Image 1 (cartoon, one colour):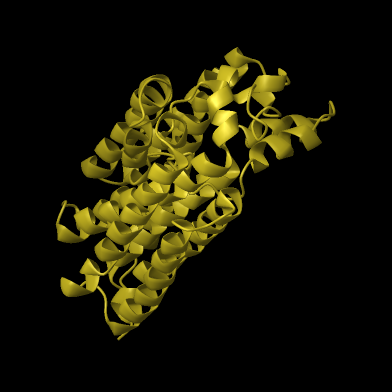
Image 2: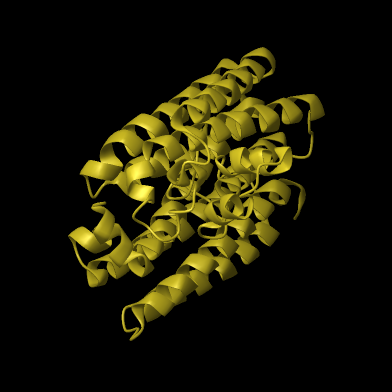
Length: 316
């Protein structure tokens, strides 16, 4: 269960964890705690927890078990935080080259690799213990699977070796909403598949947009993202294709009776605008400016999805 962001990720504001660590450059207890907190990538962390809550509320359909909800949210938060901290340790070489990450605490050395790993282990053990104790085996399996995919298959392998790293990372980025859903449902049904698919597909145009306006940084760091290996034009086409696929996946929820007309109207409007924005990119003169617009609206799209998935079952 992990981070959407790069991708996996609901990335939040690009690069805020590094800025947070840079501001906490003193020796006080508060500054030290802030630096450790920055390692959890707060923008990524809370975005992923938001999707977990949305999945939970969709499956609950207005009948919320507050204790189960609290256990899911806290346990998920800790597991995702653990993965993000460990990812910071593994990515120190890449992060040191890129502008938006060079101020992270693990890059500057304000937090060493060993204490960061210990911090990650403590967070991960505490989070998994909560999920084991108070949720179900499906949530635990999704959590462990998401952690391994993000840290090992994405962070250690595919991100550095393949253009398809984004696809791999997006699997773990979609794990939290699946975990939230199965915490209530106890099974992987059509609803579980659809919400997983929606968040999985959302991450592709979200991260590919970053890959365009951070193209030079990724090239300098030697990360084989699509905009570096293929071309900006090819990346734009992929963005549009995945945006359309995301829109279709979100509109399948009402087809199967999970949500109603209010959800359909809102997500239809959001999807139409995002698709139109994707189309304009094919003829955009300023690629960076357009890509930043796509990225910013991707955050609007996923927030709208989380909100409407949460309240859709109890609205007309």
